[in-house]
Amino acid sequence: MRKTAIIAAFTACLSLPLSAQESTVLEDGTPVRPDDADKLAMFSTHFTGALRVAFAQGQSGDIADLVDSLSGAAMPADDAIEALQGDWKCQTIKAGELSALVVYAPFDCRIEGNIFEKSTGSQRTRGAIHRDSGRLIYLGTGFVQGSEVPAYADLPTDPLSSPNPGQIWSDIALVEAVTPNRARLIFPDPALESQMNVLYLTR
Image 1 (spheres, rainbow, N blue to C red):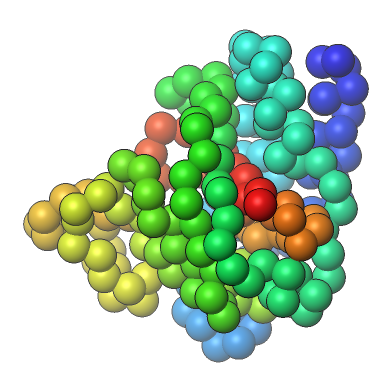
Image 2 (cartoon, rainbow, N blue to C red; image 1 turned 90 degrees about the horizontal axis):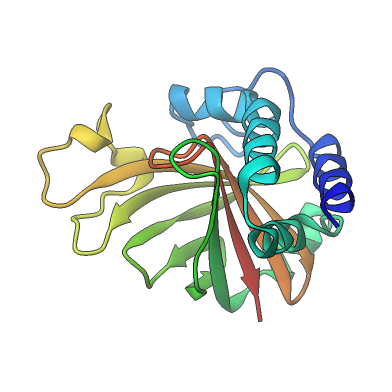
């Protein structure tokens, strides 16, 4: 099982439409924070590094969940936007760094137009999905429940050191719809606890 899992996940990584250098402006004119552009440029490094740790040290059931979340080819971006609309159950999977692999119980997420929000759980995120060079990129504000939540464009230079109540950070992710009932957001080098997060959406 573990050999099959490794092949499936690394194949998914090789198929991701990412470039070695990322602009600080998306195709639709939306500015990207320089640190987030760097994370996207290093996507494959973070992705494969997190998988190596997860497969080497993770529990077999958690590895199976990770592989499920990464399985399946992504829809074209234009088709995905329509398929993504509505309410979802979203499961956070954290890999690498603080813990080898942690799989959380599902929470609630919703996509309306291009607006995405994870609305339950202690760590949440809110922002927008953008078309960019044939792919979908999420830019949002991550926050601990109860925090004051500025828009992504209004985040301070160092959000984690913000004097505002609570805890906030910037989020960037690759968004992929696999079917109308399965999708994922893959966060390279997230601000807290891990080298990669997958937010696995099902309904």
